[in-house]
Length: 188
Image (cartoon, rainbow, N blue to C red; front, top):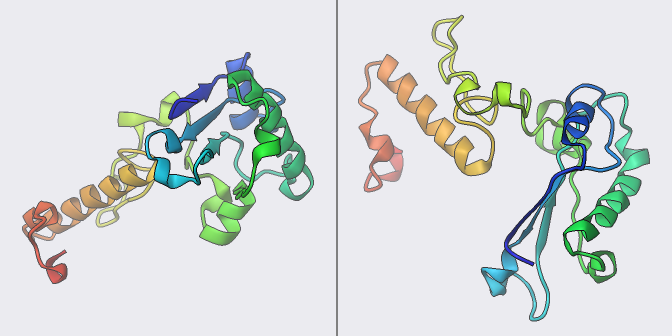
């Protein structure tokens, strides 16, 4: 299996509607599977793989009870993985870690478990995300996956750098040290 694998639901519009509007778990979810072991074999024991499976789902909502539906949705996802060649993955799992929207909320404080934040649609992606300086209220700045430039840990770090630069510049402080990798820890 290659490093990156994507399965798009047969009815992608319906899948997006289930995530964003009806807040239901799809019978045919879209998903992403990363098999990083093909790039870096040290990530798993010899002859094994390390798979990361991402299934976009609705944020926390009354329509989904993760305690009751989580196991069945996991099994449905594993069944769907056969569509990308993972027919026997269920029987080969040695260790599994699952995070649901409930977990994101309870363990990590992510509001409503919405890891893609505002919405994961074209209206909230790329340049359409809110800027890092709050326009309606002076002196308020935004940072994180719900702001420019978007979600994903490296991108969230960049959001932090952008916001830090804006804040420091607005305070009249030279922010050039943010990009200076030679700066001392106190300057960072």
